[in-house]
Length: 128
Image (cartoon, rainbow, N blue to C red; front, side, top):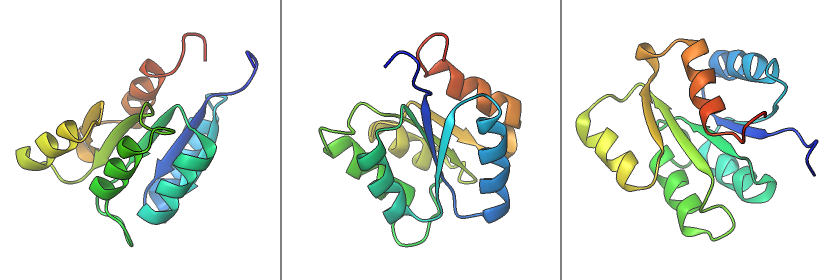
């Protein structure tokens, strides 16, 4: 339906950051789903079909690379736009994320909340 709100999934194990992302993204009028570990993140992404996933890499149960691999290997979620948001800034991690199919790789300390929102917005349908 044309009036459905875009769904953004945030997979982040830091409860404070998760609340901040949820609040700020929700203020954009988007439906925000959250997961505090990789297993729940993978499951939610496959069940709820978000347009964008903000994905941390250092997660309990399954790391972000595992979540990204799951999503890209599942035909139902292969087209979801995954934006990695991590404290890992090593070039090898960035390259691995891109090879696995992430659209963006953002080091948390390098991006303001507004910049993160702008990145998410860029991957949502026009007018969302």
